[in-house]
Structures are given as C-alpha cells and as structure tokens.
Image (cartoon, rainbow, N blue to C red; front, side):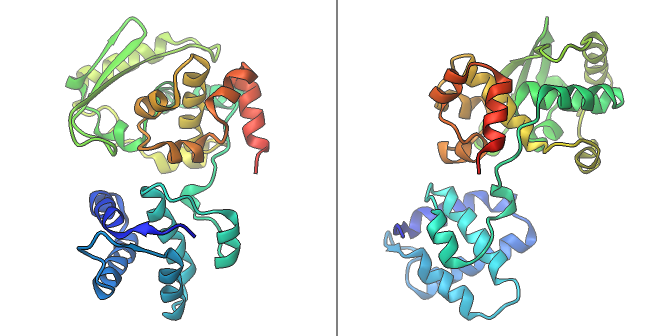
Length: 275
C-alpha cells in the first residue's frame, strides 16, 4: 500500500468537511484525532493507510466497514488509488459514492424529459447539457445567468472545486430530437420570475422517476466533450471535477479511446459493460 502524506490529507479533509454528512464528519474527525495520537497532525510525515484500517477494525463497531469505505473516499481526495487487491484484503464493498454510474442512452434521457413537467424536463436537459452538480443548479442565481441564442452563460459565486467566482458556458445541444422551444421559454420565464430558478427542486423525486443514475448525466456530458476534442484537464474544469482520478470514476476510458470509438452511443455501451 502506498504511504500517504498526513498533512496533505488533513488539509483536504478540512477543505471538504462542509460537504460531508454529520456521520461522515464524525468519521473524518476520528481520523484527525488518530493523527494527533500518532503525532501526525502538524507534521509532514507519511503513514500506512492499513494501520488506520486495523485501528478501525479493532474498535469492534457494527459499522466499521462503512467507516473504512469513507476512509477510502478520503484517500481519493489526495489521489491515492486503492487497488482491487487492497479491497479484497480489507473485505468490504466499494463505497456507494464511488460506484461507476451507468451511462444513460439518449432514448432514456429523451423519455425522461418528454414524460415530465416542464421544470423537471428542463432540469434533466440542464444537467445533460452542462454536466454540473445538483448543488450548482440549486445555487444558480437568475442575475448570474443569461441565454444568448442556444448558449447559456453562468456565473457561480463558488463551487466544490473553486472558492472564487467561476464562469462557464454550455450549449443547449439538441441531439435528443425534441422541440427545444418550450424549454427555452420556460427557462427564460424562471429567470425573470425567480431569483434562484432551481433552489426548491426535489432531486430525490427525480431519482425515483428516471430509470438511470443522475450522475450518469455528468458522464454523458464528459463523453460529448471528449468527442468534441477536449483534453482530460479541460473536461475536468468544464464539468467541475477536482482531479483526473475523479474523472476516472465517472468515465473509465481514456479520452483517446473515447475519440477512437467515435460516437456517444458506442462509448456508453462500452462503458456500461466494463466492471
């Protein structure tokens, strides 16, 4: 197992703590307490992750496997890739948040849009065309958004990967064979009548309604960006992934392989058969 720099991991934990649930926060603080006990908290020393795993196992808690899963996720924050061999050694399943999402085909996306009300259809379309997170849509302010022709220009006060004002744009591409005008008009109406057009949207209801993973919409957009000629680094910046290791979770093929396949449908089919 690769040794991990304790100082780097501590800094990344503290930077991302606000995105953790209360349970995950407790697990992260247990790790930081362990750092203090091992005199690693303020040092630039390295440690063996398996040593902490053994510490968690010895606690004899009923949910120690879930906490080990969370620890693996924390290692991903500093680009420490946990191999399948290590997973078998530690005897636990991969954490849910790191599962490779199924890539929806365009028929499924189209049906999700057309069988929903205008707002829900617009949200699915927005995520498919932008590749952004749910929280970015919820934080979106009408004053920071404009639509010119079919291009949407967005300013975010901050996002998961940047604490500064970030700007990006995307196109409402119509490769789904649907009439886009109702969604253009509805989005324009939301921008003029509400300050935060998607702040009250219930993504949990949407998850239950559609027959694909909503995270797969981010993968779908990343595939389109790759096919358009963007590099892996440009895709991460556009979609809002913090690092290339996160991108590898969502799309398990290198950009060069995606380009060789040549079409979205072929790439989606290939990715959904990978294990």
